[in-house]
Every structure is written in C-alpha cells, then in structure tokens.
Length: 350
Image 1 (cartoon, rainbow, N blue to C red):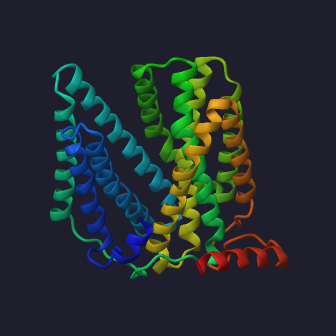
Image 2: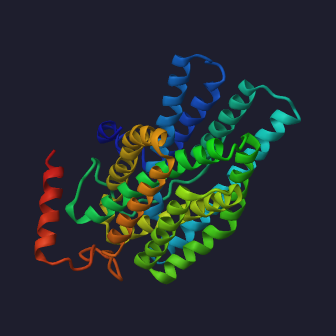
C-alpha cells in the first residue's frame, strides 16, 4: 500500500479531495459485489476491493482534515466529525435492521443497496461540491522525518491498542459472557449514541487542556480499563468497560492535532500516508501473536494492553506545552536526542 501511494500520490492523478471521493466509490462497489461472490476467492476479491477504497479514503480524509481545520479549534471540530460519523452509523444499523427484519430483504440485496448508496453519495459530492483550495502544495512521495519520531511512536502504539480492543474485547464478550448478535449490536448502538454527545465535548476538553494532559488522561484510563478486562467476572461491568474503552477512541484525535501543530504544511499528506501505514503494522503483526496468546491466557492479552498503554503514557509526557515546528518534544537532553536521531536516520535510509 505504501509503495503504491508513492507512485499514485494524491496530486498525481487527482487532487486529494477528488481522490477521497473516488476511493469511496471503489469501496461502495466492493460492498455492492460482496453478496454476489459467495466463495472464498470471491470474498477475498470483494474484501480487498472495498479495503483498497476504505484505506485510501481514510488516509486522505486525515490529511484533508488537518489541512482544512484551523489549529485553534481542530480538536473540537474533529470531535464533531466523530459525532456525525456515529450518527451515520446508527442510521446504517437501523436501516439494515429494518431491511432484514421487516422488509425481509436478502443479504445480497442489503449489500447491493448499501454499496450503491455509497457510490451515489460519493458521485454526487464529486460532481456538485466545489473543490476547496489547497493552502500548501503537498510533497508527492512518502517521507520519514526524524523530528516526527514522537508522532510515529504514538501512532504505532495507538494501532496496537486498537487491535486489542477491536478483536479481543469482542472475543471477551462472546466467548466469556456468551453475548449473541443482538447483545453485541446493542453495545454498538449504545456506543454510537454516547459518542454523538461526548465526542464534541472531548474535542473542547482537548482544546482547553492541551495534548499532553488529554493523552495522559486517556492512557491512565486505558491502563485501568485493560487491567479490569483481565479480571472482570460480571457481564455488566464488562459492558461498561467496553463502552468506556470505545469512548477513549474519541481522544485519538489528540495525536492528529499534535501532528498538525508540528508539521510542515507541505508534508501533511505524505506523512498522513506513512502514519496510516505505521498504524496498520499492528493489524498485520499483533493478531497472530495475540491469537496464540489468547488460547493460553485471555487475561494476558489485556495485561499486555495495559503495558502498551503505560508505554504510551510515558511517550505522551514528551509532548511540550505548546507543540510547534521546532518544538516537537520537551527537552530530553543531548544524549537522548542523539540516540533517537540515529535510529530515525537508519529507518529513513531503508
């Protein structure tokens, strides 16, 4: 994915805004075709197609958000975007439920309609929305800068934490407490409703507190949540932990606003591409390791999540009070800065 982005950069064939909408169309086409290829090879094909569109869209979406939103209130506006996304998810869940339970549509029809709606909305936006101006022409290849090392590290740790939550918190609900599809769907619904109200307020809190304090609160909370996951015995407490864990995802915008403040405006798009790749390294490596560990001790999976959160907490303390270009980290001392620079230089030469 990163290699391909090097050659098909946002500004090579499309401006980023157009690339985002084309990516949505590709994802919609992949969703539409899913129900019509009920084989293993067909599932691989449609999954790769929709994943291709989704991942390009998310990378460009992050880049455009950081370029278009004002630094002073970017966190608040990103919180609003999360709330809007949660509302759209609730609408989608409700529509699928009605289509299956009351209209009795087949899954093939549900996939087809959902995909075509996505394609239609993206095509409408492509044709009717104006092209918003670029405030700085973006560099057209992925870059790795040593001064962004803390952003890379926080992004990597966030990707690892996300995998533990997305996969194994769900396993806990199903395998340990016997939750069925309806119960899991109810949790998703509750998360969406709560996020619609909480996410904008978290954004305001980030603007008021600053990145370091907000991340400190998030990682302290995650240490407690992952530790509690390891020993929880009550399904109701497990549900509460799941909802709280999901709420902390809203605070992930802190890492984005931190990067927005320290970034060269020309490097937002290529660095967003690299960061998205770094975030997904965990998606490739961790499920295999944690899958084996889960068979031995589910509690150990969550305790390692607590350790990862502790590492993220320590990294967060390096964020300065007022991040800016040239003020990416707090003073670590000459020797520590030198060692970090050497590691980043080796990575950038690969």
